[in-house]
Length: 79
Image (cartoon, rainbow, N blue to C red; front, top):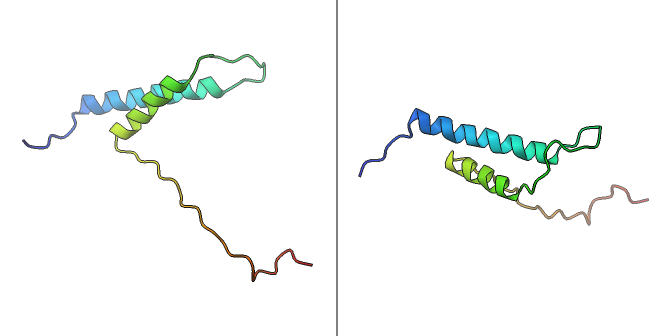
């Protein structure tokens, strides 16, 4: 079976879902100066939709490796 390129409509739908979920996640955490949230819901489901839509578009979030630094020969801060 041949690999098919994603259609333009499919890409538009994926990007629309990505933007919608990103917007809802932003609104769920943003609190205006008045102190009253615009939307109040558990963002877990929306976060899973956001993750799935980024994965379907081929985005990957990579975590940087932790680097261990040896400071035994460093004289900074020693008095």
